[in-house]
Length: 360
Image (cartoon, rainbow, N blue to C red; front, side, top):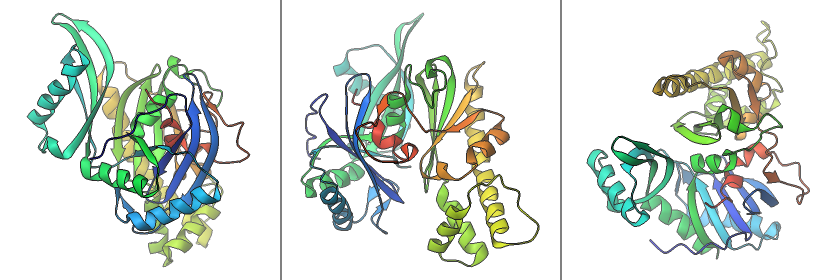
């Protein structure tokens, strides 16, 4: 692997969130307290170029990104990519408190003990979640992420072909943690440092569930369900192409709307959408139950939705009724300043790319 460039703090960066359905690009900077956004743009991901975090066709992907960089007059070179993949392995490990230069060796030893893969094929990153002391001395609770080098090389090759300077490769759960940690507020709700929240990234192929308590990361789970399930079911049940199924889905303004018994196309589509979302809810319920049983007293006070499928009309209310937990789509984040852009861009779709701007 090639060396990643040194990051210029407080400088403007370009972030890329390449997904199976859309590619989100954001230009902005971070000044210790807030993220300033200068540009946001979203384009469709070309077919066959990307799968579960891995870039499959660099040339085709390069052409699409190059075109939007030129059209948007985006000249920023420092670039950070954020991604998620089922092949990225994350684990929480408890280790004695040691110096930073000793930490990697200890982590590699611990990981190798119970994870069946060759460490030479992975990039290892970690962050300390909690420092505490018990009868044995000072301890660190550490989140470790192992990313296949093949995936990382794909991104570095892409950025090299675009004449961009790679600064970092990040993962979605980490970008969300950085963006929403501490005293951040969402939608003018009370500060997050006073509650426990579930952040659900409703993607096209996958959903990412992160839980923060009192502004601190606690738990994350990647679930292989997303908006694609709705598209496929509509297409199958109504004998439509995927493209037509997506158009029919988008035309539904509110899934809470009562489905009539007239067997109309609209009524059928609402029923199909609800059935798919019910399956999602079952999966998220399992994740929530796992978190709440880890420690006595664990609870979830609020659910926040973001990602492409959070745009489904009425989905917040549908979730709220299912979980009996207040649920909102992310519309505003106090530490994100968008005054510099003349756009009605959907902030909820750019959360991962915005969070990647923060480097710490």
